[in-house]
Length: 308
Ligand SMILES: [Zn+2]
Image (cartoon, rainbow, N blue to C red; front, side, top):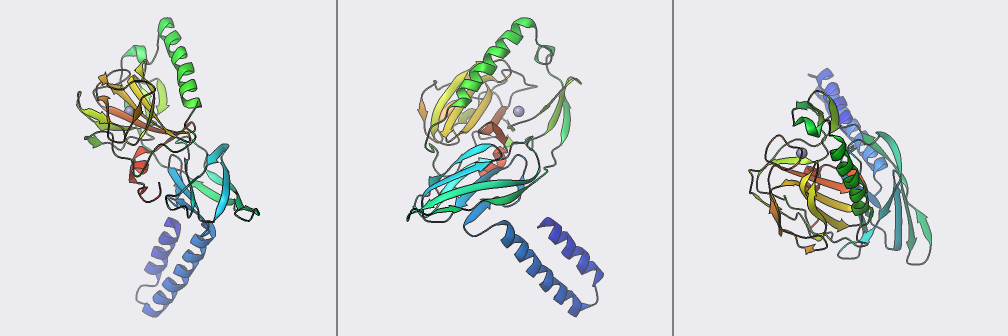
């Protein structure tokens, strides 16, 4: 749509002073824009946000009375659940911040109440997101860990694989996700970072400027599946919100929940701090869906109160 808008802008400039032609062109191009939009989104399947970029969470809605809906997206199985009023099926999915761009098939198959099967698959264009780059300096042990530290890091990689490998079979969340901390968020998701001039990595979460000791809350309901200190993450709390969706709070100075504990939206998880690989106190907050890291700011903007 942005391209169409740019086209419109160009056409408009070229037809300045020629009002009738201008009006005609606007009308014609708007009609083209409507057709383009209709082609990318059928009324039976909607994807929000409609412009899909690397790193964005997506709410997929299938508005067809069905007894079962199955989906697949970029190698991920999509788990659908019914809306509150039972009129549609929904799934929260997304595209990893480092995911590929281009045209991909969103496969959706459903079974109607009458037992008939339907294929609602469609092509979705994933656009490149333009994230910033920055350089940071941290303690050398976080860029070139020693043999003992490497052992610890390896063990934690295995632990995290296990933790993220399982998720509740139903959505544990309800309504909108809320910001985990009362502090200023930064535009830090997706930033390409170089640590100490050597290590390059992508920032897969959102940093909040929280002073040490600021209460950190559960952004939505779920189950605490990890609550312990880790090498890079520092004191870390992971909440499973079901169907492969997790939120992760890092660098805490204190943890107030335990693994296996069920938490409700707004419940205190601990206090923010500066543990692990940091340049100073802040809350690093990440959103993960089936291994893909998604933009937390976009999840917080999603209107979910009426859907589940
Ligand atoms: Zn961070």
